[in-house]
Amino acid sequence: NINCWHCGKPFTLADFPIRKTDLITEHHLDGNHMNMKLENRTLVHRSCHKSFHMKDRRAKQTYDHSLAAIEKLMIGSKG
Image (cartoon, rainbow, N blue to C red; front, side, top):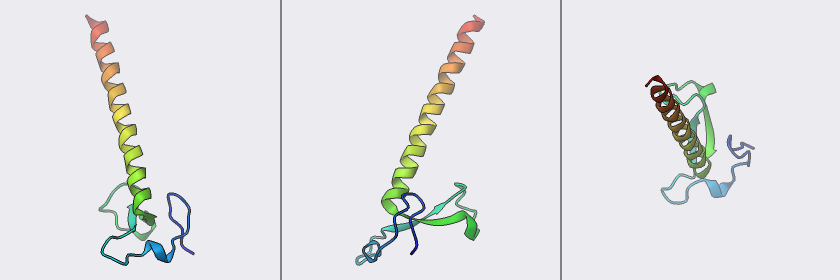
């Protein structure tokens, strides 16, 4: 069996498209889509892939907001 890298559940026949919608996609472990080395690529359910990147995007937004708040405090403390 081959399992989804994100959720760990095995892929089933239902995951393979009957119509033109792919339910399985490829994830680049290092985030670099240009790195096509086999050890950098893994299979995931499309829904897992979307969930993974949404969490990643939210974490980045939180980080960016935190940096902006720190910069604001530093600028304010200089004056």
